[in-house]
Image (tube, rainbow, N blue to C red; front, top):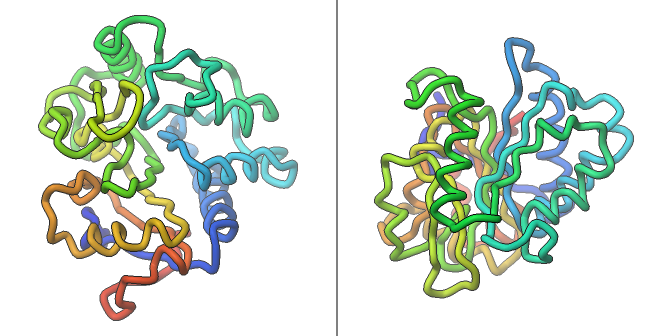
Length: 258
């Protein structure tokens, strides 16, 4: 039975961050190859663990066989900074992945950051709707095949930060967020856009993630943005042993997500 929320999500525990990145890289490779009835769409995450994932996807063993022509890369969130800013998720993914592989430029959908945050969020939402072919998300026809997510020490995911109005936005697909405990105005997918997915995968590594992962997994704190992530498909946590430190193994449904 598919798990549609974080409390019932599958959990895969691996030795370390390198194993997490390898696991997800090979899973994405197999999943992308299997998609033959249309384009394969993925929303990328920022952070050190996804960066290693991107580097692995760029290695010849995978890159030479990955179906780049059929894969469309979107972004789960972005800091509203120039595309060459060190804080840019796009800049990181370009340096780690896109400049090394034969992905068509039109298949990489960076979040725009040249206008106002509100204008750019609306522009990216229009781009998603054009790709999707409809202005309304439809049950049974997910926008994304995969949404990759991380989790911050405050429980945020993508740029869905605590205490911010975006958490209540159930209309837009893309919105803005101005965190009160982190730098930069952000663009982010909203909960409805994330929900319209076949697979949501949280990638977590390190002891710094342990406490928050355990709290989100219990689902007993409604103030944590990650606790409210759902998918019309399935949700999985792929974590290393350090991040899983505070989670009781008996409470998990541990299995391979491949």
